[in-house]
Length: 320
Image (tube, helix red, strand yellow):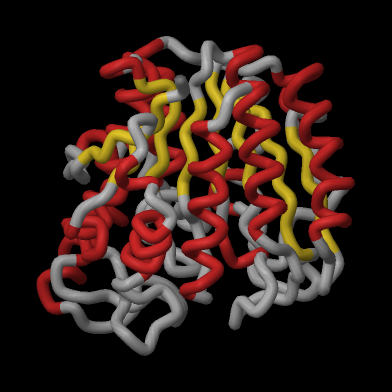
């Protein structure tokens, strides 16, 4: 039996920018509604874990202290933007963002320590892959992925990590902050940056310095289908299995790559998410003693959020 922890609670719904914003506070409940509808909340293979607040020292392991202080101050008034216009401030933004980071760190701690026999975990509001060390970007305030990579290495001595990103947007905040890291293997399938924010992630970008060929970018054309995704993902499987051979796998499974997302142009279904999660689940058991953590990332169609993320959870609890 593959036990999977789900990070869920009201504190994660605090991360959102209001009802009219694409990243609203209801996204976690869009997932939870589908999760309950198909009976996953009653599955013996699922354990629900409460959100957790990150310590500031964890946040500044990745982010510049001046930027963290800026977010703190912005959260006192709730006025203005934290970037050039995508990511509004709101009252309590620092605490809300710290819950996302803390919950992601808790997911990794649970998986690495195998708490109660748990091998996999999912934080639906994690995966804030656009924020950089010194600034917010694309609805992402603190980069919980980057923080987790550094903290996992510091606390547990895990060095060789595979990060796979299937969000429609290129995970620039992870890619460029670790572009020269030879032990972080990145595979990022996304809509071609010529057509979508942030405009990065070209196929020729394979890492820099000693990390050349430890990064894999696969841009998809607008309107790409499950067939296109699955054909491309076979390259990811080979990359992880034969080159990365990781000690830990991270999956950012943004639901905005599904058809009818209001911000993107891909035509995937939840079949792609289930396929990717299933293949990575198998590779986690082959290389990582089962250790895989999924993070929700983007997604702005409520039906797609429920379908994509439950497809990932279902893949984690299936036999491998």
